[in-house]
Amino acid sequence: MTPFDRRDLLRLAAVGAAGSLTAACSDRTATPAAAGSTAPVSSAAPASSAGAAPAGSTTAAAAPGASAAPSLAAGLPFEIRSGPGTGDAVALTFHGQGDPAIARALLAEAARADARITVMAVGTWLDQQPEMARLVLDGGHELGNHTEHHLPISTMSADHAYAEIAACGARLKQLTGSIGRWFRPSQAQDCTATVAAQARRAGYAHCLSYDLDSLDYTDPGATAVTRTVLDAVRPGSVVSLHFGHSGTVAALPAILDGLHRRGLRAVTTSELLS
Image 1 (tube, one colour):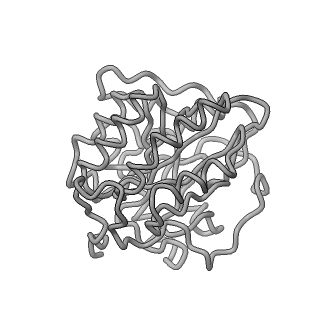
Image 2: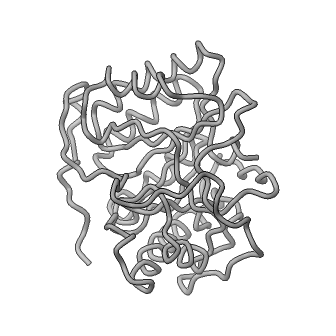
Protein backbone atom coordinates (compact mmCIF):
# COMPACT_ATOMS: atom_id res chain seq x y z
CA MET A 1 0.00 0.00 0.00
CA THR A 2 1.36 3.38 -0.86
CA PRO A 3 1.35 6.37 1.50
CA PHE A 4 -1.42 8.92 1.15
CA ASP A 5 -0.89 11.75 -1.33
CA ARG A 6 1.10 14.51 0.38
CA ARG A 7 -0.21 17.41 -1.68
CA ASP A 8 -2.04 18.66 1.41
CA LEU A 9 1.18 19.47 3.30
CA LEU A 10 0.77 23.23 3.47
CA ARG A 11 3.04 25.86 4.97
CA LEU A 12 1.68 27.83 7.87
CA ALA A 13 2.68 31.05 6.14
CA ALA A 14 -0.13 30.40 3.71
CA VAL A 15 -2.82 30.83 6.41
CA GLY A 16 -5.90 32.38 4.92
CA ALA A 17 -5.09 31.39 1.34
CA ALA A 18 -6.40 28.39 -0.55
CA GLY A 19 -3.63 25.85 -0.75
CA SER A 20 -3.77 22.11 -0.72
CA LEU A 21 -5.54 19.84 -3.17
CA THR A 22 -6.07 16.88 -0.91
CA ALA A 23 -8.78 14.38 -1.62
CA ALA A 24 -12.00 14.98 0.26
CA CYS A 25 -12.81 12.78 3.22
CA SER A 26 -16.45 12.66 2.18
CA ASP A 27 -17.12 10.25 -0.67
CA ARG A 28 -20.23 11.57 -2.36
CA THR A 29 -20.67 8.33 -4.31
CA ALA A 30 -21.27 6.36 -1.13
CA THR A 31 -24.84 5.60 -0.19
CA PRO A 32 -25.50 7.47 3.06
CA ALA A 33 -27.18 5.61 5.89
CA ALA A 34 -30.02 7.21 7.74
CA ALA A 35 -29.05 8.66 11.10
CA GLY A 36 -29.50 6.07 13.80
CA SER A 37 -30.58 3.41 11.31
CA THR A 38 -27.90 0.90 12.20
CA ALA A 39 -28.31 -1.71 14.93
CA PRO A 40 -27.60 -0.83 18.56
CA VAL A 41 -24.21 -1.71 19.94
CA SER A 42 -23.86 -5.38 20.78
CA SER A 43 -21.48 -6.90 23.29
CA ALA A 44 -17.84 -5.93 23.10
CA ALA A 45 -16.17 -6.77 19.83
CA PRO A 46 -13.02 -8.87 19.87
CA ALA A 47 -9.73 -7.03 20.01
CA SER A 48 -7.65 -6.93 16.84
CA SER A 49 -4.65 -9.13 16.31
CA ALA A 50 -2.58 -5.94 16.58
CA GLY A 51 -3.27 -5.88 20.31
CA ALA A 52 -6.20 -3.50 20.32
CA ALA A 53 -7.83 -2.51 23.59
CA PRO A 54 -11.60 -2.55 24.05
CA ALA A 55 -13.20 0.31 22.16
CA GLY A 56 -14.58 2.05 25.21
CA SER A 57 -11.28 2.16 27.06
CA THR A 58 -9.52 5.34 28.11
CA THR A 59 -7.79 7.06 25.21
CA ALA A 60 -5.08 8.79 27.20
CA ALA A 61 -3.18 6.07 29.02
CA ALA A 62 0.28 7.23 27.89
CA ALA A 63 -0.36 10.96 27.72
CA PRO A 64 0.39 12.84 30.94
CA GLY A 65 -2.27 15.38 31.81
CA ALA A 66 -4.97 13.82 29.64
CA SER A 67 -8.16 12.79 31.41
CA ALA A 68 -10.22 9.65 30.96
CA ALA A 69 -12.98 9.84 28.38
CA PRO A 70 -16.47 9.99 29.91
CA SER A 71 -18.77 7.00 29.71
CA LEU A 72 -21.17 7.05 26.78
CA ALA A 73 -24.94 7.16 27.04
CA ALA A 74 -26.65 3.79 26.80
CA GLY A 75 -28.29 2.61 23.58
CA LEU A 76 -26.20 4.52 21.05
CA PRO A 77 -26.36 3.11 17.49
CA PHE A 78 -23.25 1.74 15.83
CA GLU A 79 -23.12 4.62 13.36
CA ILE A 80 -23.37 8.08 14.85
CA ARG A 81 -24.06 11.23 12.86
CA SER A 82 -25.04 13.65 15.62
CA GLY A 83 -25.68 13.98 19.32
CA PRO A 84 -28.64 15.12 21.39
CA GLY A 85 -30.23 18.36 20.22
CA THR A 86 -31.41 19.39 23.67
CA GLY A 87 -28.12 20.62 25.12
CA ASP A 88 -25.55 23.27 24.26
CA ALA A 89 -22.73 21.08 22.92
CA VAL A 90 -21.34 20.43 19.44
CA ALA A 91 -18.44 18.22 18.36
CA LEU A 92 -15.82 19.60 15.97
CA THR A 93 -14.11 16.56 14.44
CA PHE A 94 -10.92 16.90 12.42
CA HIS A 95 -9.30 14.65 9.83
CA GLY A 96 -5.80 14.31 11.33
CA GLN A 97 -3.19 14.65 8.63
CA GLY A 98 -0.98 17.31 7.06
CA ASP A 99 1.60 19.90 8.05
CA PRO A 100 2.22 19.65 11.81
CA ALA A 101 2.63 23.45 11.99
CA ILE A 102 -0.96 23.84 10.81
CA ALA A 103 -2.11 21.23 13.32
CA ARG A 104 -0.33 23.09 16.12
CA ALA A 105 -1.96 26.36 15.05
CA LEU A 106 -5.40 24.73 15.13
CA LEU A 107 -4.77 23.29 18.57
CA ALA A 108 -3.61 26.73 19.78
CA GLU A 109 -6.85 28.30 18.54
CA ALA A 110 -8.87 25.62 20.32
CA ALA A 111 -6.94 26.32 23.53
CA ARG A 112 -7.59 30.06 23.17
CA ALA A 113 -11.32 29.44 23.16
CA ASP A 114 -11.18 26.67 25.80
CA ALA A 115 -12.65 24.34 23.18
CA ARG A 116 -12.23 20.57 22.94
CA ILE A 117 -12.08 18.68 19.65
CA THR A 118 -11.88 15.13 18.29
CA VAL A 119 -9.01 14.29 15.93
CA MET A 120 -9.56 11.32 13.63
CA ALA A 121 -5.93 10.54 12.93
CA VAL A 122 -4.48 8.87 9.85
CA GLY A 123 -1.97 6.20 10.85
CA THR A 124 0.79 7.28 8.48
CA TRP A 125 0.54 10.82 9.88
CA LEU A 126 1.12 9.45 13.37
CA ASP A 127 4.01 7.41 11.98
CA GLN A 128 5.59 10.62 10.68
CA GLN A 129 4.51 12.92 13.53
CA PRO A 130 4.20 10.73 16.64
CA GLU A 131 4.47 13.74 18.95
CA MET A 132 1.09 14.97 17.71
CA ALA A 133 -0.72 12.24 19.65
CA ARG A 134 0.51 13.62 22.95
CA LEU A 135 -0.16 17.23 21.93
CA VAL A 136 -3.76 16.36 21.10
CA LEU A 137 -4.42 14.45 24.31
CA ASP A 138 -2.56 16.88 26.57
CA GLY A 139 -4.85 19.61 25.24
CA GLY A 140 -7.87 17.74 26.60
CA HIS A 141 -8.93 16.54 23.16
CA GLU A 142 -9.45 12.96 21.95
CA LEU A 143 -8.03 10.80 19.20
CA GLY A 144 -9.81 8.38 16.88
CA ASN A 145 -8.97 6.07 13.98
CA HIS A 146 -9.21 7.32 10.38
CA THR A 147 -7.41 4.30 8.85
CA GLU A 148 -3.73 3.80 8.13
CA HIS A 149 -3.37 5.29 4.63
CA HIS A 150 -6.64 7.18 4.04
CA LEU A 151 -7.52 5.14 0.96
CA PRO A 152 -11.11 4.60 -0.33
CA ILE A 153 -12.09 1.98 2.23
CA SER A 154 -15.60 1.40 0.83
CA THR A 155 -14.06 -0.21 -2.27
CA MET A 156 -11.78 -2.60 -0.36
CA SER A 157 -12.14 -6.27 0.39
CA ALA A 158 -12.99 -7.17 3.96
CA ASP A 159 -9.43 -8.21 4.79
CA HIS A 160 -7.93 -5.09 3.23
CA ALA A 161 -10.36 -2.86 5.14
CA TYR A 162 -9.55 -4.67 8.37
CA ALA A 163 -5.81 -4.22 7.78
CA GLU A 164 -6.29 -0.47 7.30
CA ILE A 165 -8.32 -0.12 10.49
CA ALA A 166 -6.19 -2.43 12.63
CA ALA A 167 -2.89 -0.84 11.57
CA CYS A 168 -4.03 2.62 12.61
CA GLY A 169 -5.46 1.19 15.83
CA ALA A 170 -2.14 -0.47 16.61
CA ARG A 171 -0.30 2.83 16.12
CA LEU A 172 -2.77 4.63 18.39
CA LYS A 173 -2.36 1.93 21.03
CA GLN A 174 1.42 2.15 20.81
CA LEU A 175 1.37 5.93 21.28
CA THR A 176 -1.49 6.34 23.76
CA GLY A 177 -2.25 2.97 25.33
CA SER A 178 -5.60 2.65 23.54
CA ILE A 179 -6.94 2.15 20.02
CA GLY A 180 -9.28 5.10 20.66
CA ARG A 181 -13.03 5.06 21.01
CA TRP A 182 -14.03 6.23 17.52
CA PHE A 183 -13.52 4.93 13.99
CA ARG A 184 -14.29 6.97 10.88
CA PRO A 185 -14.04 5.43 7.38
CA SER A 186 -11.59 7.01 4.97
CA GLN A 187 -12.93 8.79 1.87
CA ALA A 188 -16.50 8.00 2.93
CA GLN A 189 -19.05 9.58 5.22
CA ASP A 190 -20.66 6.31 6.32
CA CYS A 191 -19.59 2.75 7.05
CA THR A 192 -20.73 0.13 4.56
CA ALA A 193 -21.81 -3.21 6.01
CA THR A 194 -18.39 -4.67 5.15
CA VAL A 195 -16.48 -1.81 6.75
CA ALA A 196 -18.72 -1.85 9.81
CA ALA A 197 -18.02 -5.55 10.31
CA GLN A 198 -14.28 -4.99 10.06
CA ALA A 199 -14.39 -2.03 12.44
CA ARG A 200 -16.14 -4.22 15.00
CA ARG A 201 -13.58 -6.95 14.34
CA ALA A 202 -10.82 -4.43 15.10
CA GLY A 203 -12.43 -3.50 18.42
CA TYR A 204 -14.59 -0.46 17.60
CA ALA A 205 -18.13 -0.18 18.91
CA HIS A 206 -18.98 2.92 16.85
CA CYS A 207 -18.54 4.41 13.39
CA LEU A 208 -18.37 8.19 13.75
CA SER A 209 -20.01 9.96 10.83
CA TYR A 210 -21.18 13.61 10.87
CA ASP A 211 -24.20 15.72 10.03
CA LEU A 212 -22.40 18.93 8.99
CA ASP A 213 -19.67 18.96 6.33
CA SER A 214 -17.66 22.18 6.42
CA LEU A 215 -16.27 21.51 2.91
CA ASP A 216 -12.99 23.01 4.10
CA TYR A 217 -11.04 20.41 2.12
CA THR A 218 -12.13 22.23 -1.07
CA ASP A 219 -10.22 25.31 0.14
CA PRO A 220 -13.05 27.82 -0.44
CA GLY A 221 -11.49 30.38 1.92
CA ALA A 222 -11.93 31.08 5.61
CA THR A 223 -15.08 33.17 5.19
CA ALA A 224 -16.86 30.41 3.25
CA VAL A 225 -15.85 27.73 5.76
CA THR A 226 -17.06 29.85 8.66
CA ARG A 227 -20.37 30.58 6.96
CA THR A 228 -20.95 26.93 6.04
CA VAL A 229 -20.49 25.85 9.64
CA LEU A 230 -22.33 28.67 11.43
CA ASP A 231 -25.27 28.69 9.01
CA ALA A 232 -26.05 25.03 9.71
CA VAL A 233 -24.70 24.19 13.18
CA ARG A 234 -27.15 23.29 15.90
CA PRO A 235 -26.97 21.71 19.35
CA GLY A 236 -25.73 18.13 18.91
CA SER A 237 -24.01 18.70 15.55
CA VAL A 238 -20.98 16.64 14.62
CA VAL A 239 -18.94 18.83 12.25
CA SER A 240 -16.39 17.50 9.76
CA LEU A 241 -13.22 19.63 9.46
CA HIS A 242 -9.62 18.99 8.47
CA PHE A 243 -6.08 19.56 9.63
CA GLY A 244 -3.71 20.32 6.74
CA HIS A 245 -5.66 23.27 5.34
CA SER A 246 -4.58 26.82 6.10
CA GLY A 247 -8.08 28.18 5.46
CA THR A 248 -9.34 26.06 8.36
CA VAL A 249 -6.83 27.69 10.70
CA ALA A 250 -8.05 31.11 9.58
CA ALA A 251 -11.71 30.09 9.97
CA LEU A 252 -11.51 28.42 13.38
CA PRO A 253 -11.41 31.57 15.57
CA ALA A 254 -14.57 32.92 13.92
CA ILE A 255 -16.27 29.51 14.17
CA LEU A 256 -15.47 29.19 17.87
CA ASP A 257 -16.44 32.79 18.59
CA GLY A 258 -19.69 32.28 16.66
CA LEU A 259 -20.50 29.17 18.67
CA HIS A 260 -19.86 31.07 21.89
CA ARG A 261 -22.18 33.91 20.88
CA ARG A 262 -24.93 31.33 20.30
CA GLY A 263 -24.41 29.75 23.69
CA LEU A 264 -22.84 26.61 22.20
CA ARG A 265 -19.75 24.78 23.44
CA ALA A 266 -17.21 22.82 21.38
CA VAL A 267 -16.63 19.51 23.20
CA THR A 268 -15.15 16.13 22.41
CA THR A 269 -17.41 13.59 20.78
CA SER A 270 -17.31 11.50 23.93
CA GLU A 271 -18.58 14.43 25.98
CA LEU A 272 -21.28 15.17 23.42
CA LEU A 273 -22.54 11.59 23.69
CA SER A 274 -22.00 10.99 27.38
